[in-house]
Length: 250
Image 1 (cartoon, rainbow, N blue to C red):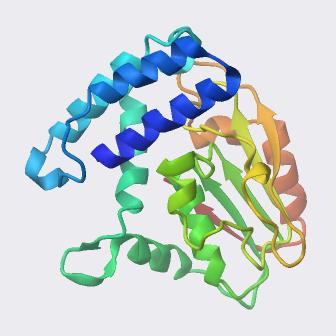
Image 2 (cartoon, helix red, strand yellow):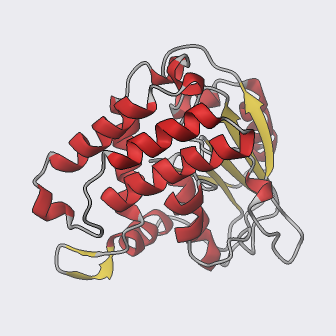
């Protein structure tokens, strides 16, 4: 968990320096100082609650950044703790429960088990589900007329982007269209425009990103994204062709 928190801080620092925001960069440096000195420590040796306490201290420090402090999305850090811990656990690539397969492989096998490569597949994914969908589709042999990603952390620097498989990241081979949506108040989305970081597949397909604006203190939920006409409209059009729809949730 510490390595993932460190990557989160690096991402905030990276974005601050790109904007020339020295105050936020200084806050990120202070947050980094809150982490333990030891690198690569095992979560199990910390105790059950320690990873969340570490991340809580970091988030409290990051809230001092002017660009983050005023945002409604920071009203509660608890949902963010949950989402980031889920992404971090998936990307650890470790075996679990005595199964020789890693946890991430087991998750991908589970979500693909109900699909039929002989039928067109529309994929709607959200949050961590966008990471699972991206990696699962790299080995999918059927047609994917539409991939929709909502609130995706896929392009989040060292925390996610650089840990994806395969590298360098590219649009899955069978995806024919990729629509990516983000909300301006969704802090899980570190870098929203996936097309800047994703290489095209052999058909030249890259993500097309659009922003939506929702109301409320926590805008990351899939339901808030799906209520947007910009999101629902393309899905309705795609469904007129009658393909299977698979939802990859966090």
